[in-house]
Length: 174
Image (cartoon, rainbow, N blue to C red; front, side):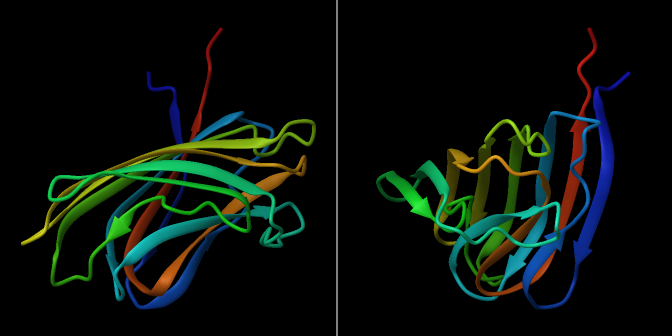
């Protein structure tokens, strides 16, 4: 039996500035797995994410810290780090639909609902752009606030034309 429980699947198939997945984190799980697939975008750039608190508000305070390593097959790698930012940045990089031939992203979120702990993330992803090459991402982050987080908001420069976001709860058997 799998320890993953599908909690939500959100699909976007028209151009939107951002996608929110709300009310998916609860006291039922401490660890969540989120996947982004079938992502197509309007403008070449990195994908960002903010967290949504239990009041339904997107947390935009400058309390996000994250670091990422972006590895390209066609050029040198890139290290990025942000402290006191208002988002998790560098979750992945995408080229417009005419270039991208595939991509995927996985994010693990730890203790989002727990008001006595910071919310941590680790993420990794890969993509391939026709005529450009392969690119891979690995990152970590923390929301330096002890609030109850119940969802995510994904956004980027330009519209998100297509995306499937799946949220799973990870059950730990003792």
